[in-house]
Structures are given as structure tokens and as C-alpha cells.
Length: 378
Image 1 (cartoon, rainbow, N blue to C red):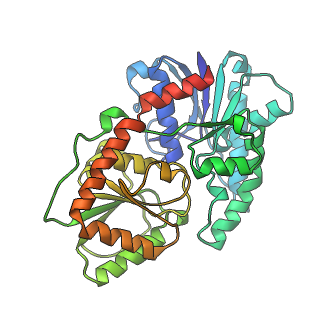
Image 2: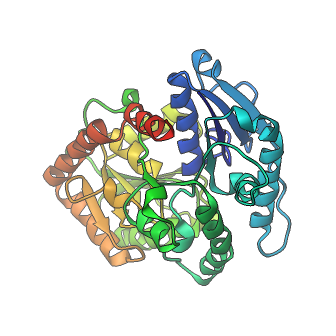
Image 3: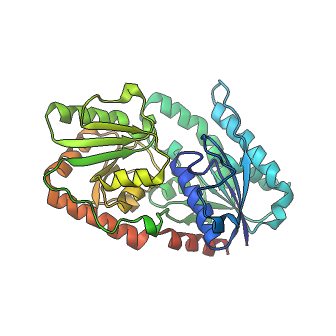
């Protein structure tokens, strides 16, 4: 079997939830001895030609096609334009081999040109699936700028979603968004994301008597809720609450809180370093205004953390009162309340941390997920 996986980058060459998901798709398809034509690009200083993120055995089944993402120009909608140009590069790279594929999996706008061309009847090929992570452009926006950006993206996303043969969803509220765009239920395939079994901690970190550690993992975007999180942290500091909060990711200096118990690690691309920090923590914070199926939550659960997250996208498929606190987006008061509960009830917190590990082991395992995908393709 041969699959084309057209992506907007894979981890660690491009940082993001979509990119981490694409990496695991390629990795676990290769583990199943599926031939994968991987289309991606580099946004790092790493040598993408080495593909060191895969084992030598996995590389035997991965044909890496490295593209150059067009440089963004300065005009409204420049990202959409650049994304279409990138999809043209992807299309031109594989159009001569379209007859060889059993399935084509496209991420975001990366399959735009291909899907359009097939929809117009200009080419014949296997079925094409599209995945727009969490359809964040149809979720709640935190401010006017974000709302404008969403409206610019919506028409193209809706068009591609309707034109594709198959639409992938993580489930939850994402499926409802896809249906609202006019997609028939028979075209929607719900498959979650997951973590590697080997990366799941055997037990939770226990440090009674010490400060509860919170951790935020991600890049700075307005929709990630860092503004609301900072508001809560400053208030808790003023009240002399006892806790530590660590940030992993590129946070601008203007958004940093100067305090000995607020720690910023910056961007980390080494998975082992990230895992170590997570395993020394207690609670993962994900106060986003919009999300898909955040890999950071899965990584936090796999490290034995309780989760404080907003009920957006498919987050409710991972987080409940059993393993954390699920709150409304854009509500600093509810975020503060959840953080205080985590600080003040160690017994309840330990129970939630234990439950995170149970959910990961029983539900979100990449071996099972890739088998679900292969059954869909077949």
C-alpha cells in the first residue's frame, strides 16, 4: 500500500499540534510497512534531509519530499495566498505519481490545489482526505483581530471541506462544526490522536509538602489564552498563593511575569527535555479560546498530570472531572477557581493525575489509532 501524506510541516522541523500529529502519522504508517510519500518543509535550523526523528527501519518506508514554503508577503490574506502557492508545489511534486497511491491524506491547506483539480474533474486519482485540525476559524475568537483572521480563512476552509472525499475529525464539537458546513455524516471519519505507549509514565510524580507545579506548553498566540492566564497568575501572586508555574515555548518578553516562581524555558525541540519537565509537574494548563485535539494535553496526561483546560474543540474527549477541570473559554474567574482547587486539595489532585494515566493507556494509543486509519483506507 502507498499513501501520500501532504502536510504543512512535521515536528520537529515545524512546531505545532498539527505538525506533531503529522509526524506520528508518518511514523506509525511506516511502522506498519506502509509506503509513505511525505511532503513537508523545514522551519528550523535542523537538517531535514537526515530525518533523524525517524528510526532507520521507518525511513525505509518514507519517501521524503521537501518543499519550500513561500515567504509571506505584506497584504491582507497573505497566509492564504502563501498556503495556496505551497499546495501548488505539493501538487506538482506528485501529479505524475497520482495513479500509484491508494489514499491521499492532506493537512490544512496543503492539498488545496490537488482537491480543487480533482473536484473539477481534471484528474483521476484515489480518494483524498482532508484534516483541518480543530476548525478553529469557526470557534470563538478572543478579539477583533482574531475574528477578522477567522473570517478570512472560513470561505477557503469550507470549500475544501466540502470538496474532499473524506473529512477527518477528532470528534466532539469539531464534528458538529463540520456538519454545520454542510458535510454529510457519511464523509466524516472520527479518529482521535494519541501518544506512543513507550512515552507513558509508569506512575505520577509525588511531592507532598512542596509547591504544586503548573505548566503551560505551547507557542504564543492570542487564542492560547495566555493573556487570561497571566491575569490569574498576577492575582494569585498578589494574594501570596503558594505555587510554581513553568512555561515551555517562545513567550514574548512583554508577556512574561517577573517572579521567582514563574519560570520560562523558551522553545524546546528536544522531546526528552520536555517530557522531563512535564513529569516533574502536577497540572497542565490549556486555557485556549479555540483548539482541535491538543497534543499538549495528551503529553501532559501521559506524564501523569491533571489538566485544566477549556471546553473547546475535542478537548472534552480527553478532559473531564475525573482527570481535571473543564472550564468555559475566556473566563479568568473560572480559571482562577480551578487553579486554587488544584493548589488546595492534594488528595483530589493526585486522584486526577492517576486517572490521566488510566485514560491514556486505555484510549489514546498510536498503535490502535493507526489501525483505525488503515481500516478506513482499506
